[in-house]
Length: 448
Image (cartoon, rainbow, N blue to C red; front, side, top):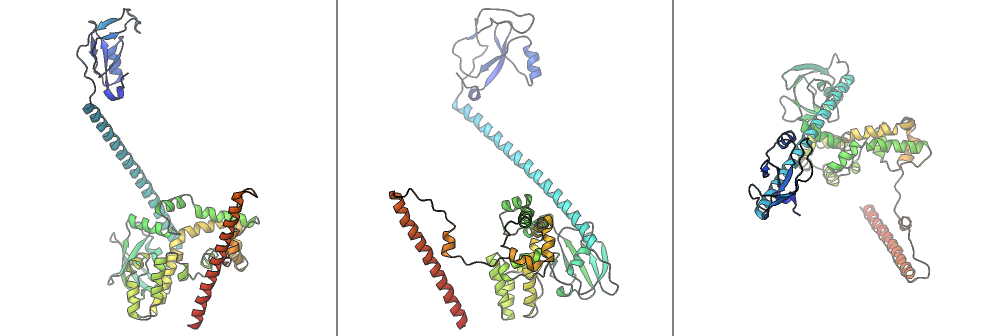
């Protein structure tokens, strides 16, 4: 009748004097040795007012079994019953143990996660160094010599043409055995660092004369941050991003589109012109409207609309941190330099930042040879991938709903007919208001 979980218990046996004797054992083996052929009793820590009636009328398991009638055995010492203080103390100890276990479990999980992350990071780093070695071209004989100083003190000299893509320079630097996935270079006399993610030529970044260039590798945390940023399309939350990348949804979407189109199914029709050029290896010229982040889009427009150097400097100053992280921070010496700056920003935000997802999408579209056909016949495939946007009308929106009426002739059906009529009137009014606003906007633009 007593819960042993609350009051606790002790183990005991009966000695030759037929008195209960408490047992002290730290293991089952020790307990077996102490008990021997005797019976093992579980004694609760509860107050026992009367002598314990121990039934010894059943034979023990040993060869020298003895049978005795039930007798009264006095306790060698009284057992105190439970009290609120003891129970609360026991619960507090249990809570502490649970908390320590949870902390230990979280620590182990975090350790495993970091180990896996470091392993993936190192595997990706070595693979990228290998790819850079494969892309490295022969050194030109008449280029400008650039001297590179690496963080470990080693130095290398190589010649480049001023019209070479700066990515060729990054590939050469990134073949160092200690190279990270992303890194910075900085001319010895300059305070501005150039990220390995920037586009353009050496001339665009004023690397036009023999220079001493210092290389700085990024920490793993910074590399991981850029990697995650470049592999996010719609700026999902960290959990959504991790799920999307882990489940390789970009590849699966491309594969689904390819299988559908090859077998005569529906085409996507929702690709933007910029995205279609990316997958078809065309000339990519992203526009400000391709930037999904509205706050960033407003800042980019401020740079685009700058009419004086003062306005341009003010517009770039509020984006200095973004420009540095994106590798787009360049010296703006005149107003027409903003065009090159805008081009760098848009290429990074719309194209280079999404290189990983785009490649996986293209690999998926390569299923059954669809991507190859798209590249060879771009103009024929363009309408299938980039359908012109259709204006949303009241009829089109009404057709999206399936109205489930009640039985004809019932009171509910009469009410539903009235509600549906009001709903369709509302859609027509909303369409008319939208058309009026657009017409007014067009008239104002024409007057300007």
